[in-house]
Image (cartoon, one colour):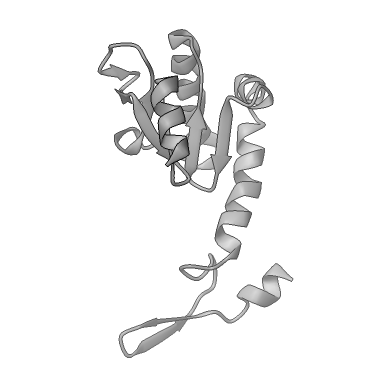
Length: 138
């Protein structure tokens, strides 16, 4: 079915057309689904990532990921494990586009900026529970 949906996809650039031999067309509804299947396998390749996911402390949908931990050392190890996925799965953690939600008064952990509020899948998550409840009522 996937092959039928993709077969003979035509990419148009200006007045030129090219038949796509691999990948999916921009905006394809299959893109996030197939990426999630691939990401599931990648995240399952590490015992630490499996452990963090089984606790519900690593949420992922397409290229959005939320990692939760109260332990700096675990955050650092998790970031290291995610960075290691590049070698086997060609997945890269973009530290410049990443943020760590923490109540700690630190600027960065493992090269990633620390913040008190993040957006995950369009929902604002705040480290302060009172602020989070106020935002949830809006």
